[in-house]
Image (cartoon, rainbow, N blue to C red):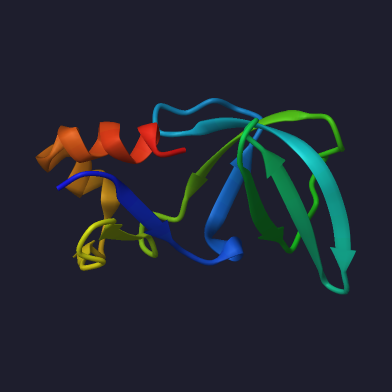
Length: 108
């Protein structure tokens, strides 16, 4: 297997000002109010992830933040076969297969 594809919903992206061992550093590019929710555009340089939050907390445009994914809702697919290779708790999976942990992060 080669690269992995992450599939998830914007509301499954968790944002924090604190770095965690499995988080990804990003910069808040856009904050767009959407009624009862906020759409947060997370700039990784070459890629943008969009998160949806119910509470804005103290996030502002330009803030450096760290994000991760709700480990109960992550879905990973093999890029070549498009088969779902993991659809449960990614923390358990990465302990089991650290090679895919590296590939997942290297795809970002």
